[in-house]
Image 1 (cartoon, rainbow, N blue to C red):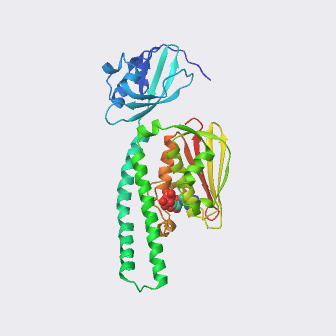
Image 2: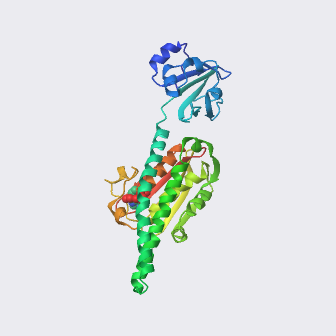
Image 3: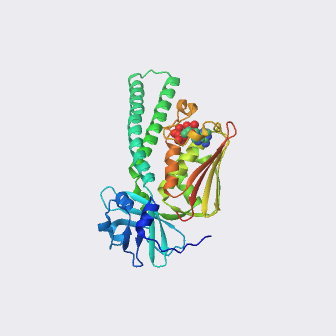
Length: 332
Ligand code: ADP
């Protein structure tokens, strides 16, 4: 570790560091505010100096406390856009040094929200038209053969499932926003998280999931995290045979909780792996499958993990199954 003890002029520092930076006094009021900080936050130097971060922002999360190493901090802007700005705060001998990065993550979430709404609204039309057509056929043809009747009813059922899935995605889009993600945090065990995720699946799908989750605890938004895990489970079940189980394990490792979903299904060819988290990416197989989704599941799951400071890793090979690992910091 190299320690620096320097007397440096803020103007010089500002030229050296292109990030938005500021200095706070021991009492927490701003004493210096760079031009980049002004342009990123929309708060001018004149407005910032002499005020505390609590006065300048709608929320400072977490509140500044002693930290010998830079601690991540999120500021929520006070304007109507309510942007979340991510940065780091380092406590000095007297006061604080803060630096902020761009708010790309939350811009991406905003973008995601619009795309989900656009894609799903479009997709809603097809199942509705098909349900209506089959229902009309059934009503108007009383003498319909039993085999055809069963087929039409099962199509109606599948289309209704697609609708339910689409509506879930829409509801999620409505919930995905920076402020929400910052406010809803609870402690929960991996087992409890799995229960919430399983409740999102049909009973027959949930019955195929084998649990090997310990009692490890993590912090986060139970609803969003259960949506992320449900997407991983849904895929594992969808892309593997009915006779093979899907196994969920949880373990603590290095300040994070790992929840791993393993299947013995069709796997993912190495050349497809880099793309599966992209929005609207679907394999050809999934395009033709009756349960095919919108190629948003993994994208949404990864955004949720990232919003918690975590990630999703994948190991997979064609024909030998896949393992998706949701990694969430213990104190997200
Ligand atoms: P979808 O709604 O199509 O499932 P996802 O974003 O959840 O969209 O997944 C994208 C693609 O990644 C899928 O279409 C599939 O090709 C692949 N994939 C995801 N999970 C698995 C898995 N467990 N096994 C095999 N392929 C998978």
